Length: 213
Image (cartoon, rainbow, N blue to C red; front, side, top):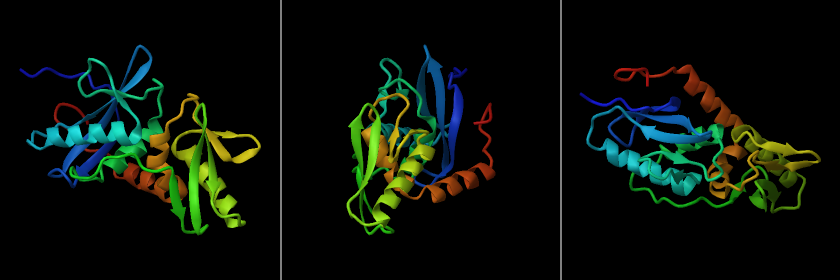
């Protein structure tokens, strides 16, 4: 008789993984001694599922900045040992878009912005503080930088800095460069990202064997 795993609470669901036989994938969270830990899991019995989860674990480590929990197979955590749930959920769904043969590497902290017609850079200032800077010294550049900072505040639940409309801070006071790089494009287009979240919520959830996944 199979042993039931303590998966904690499911915080995100990919109903259909197009890169692995349309299986569903869940992102779970549990707290151990006050430290949030995360697990990618599927109830699917297909042989390729294990390889898919291994790929996503590597991607979450390299491209979202998580680390393996010592002695706990498959469980991950942030190095700051705090929770960045909203950012992780968004990053998880984006990483699920990648096929297993995709190159896994951190994304840059600079991205081209069409509206400003210049590059935007998320410059780390230390202790979890990031300032969005526009390459072009035009009126549009700073406006787009400020809009991107507001996008990070929503997507990553970051704090805004009073008197600095282009500066945001992680509440944990720890730098998360790879997570910022992963979500920089989403922060640029935060309205579209929020609409995707609303549509996903409206679709509801899938049932899984023995429990609602």
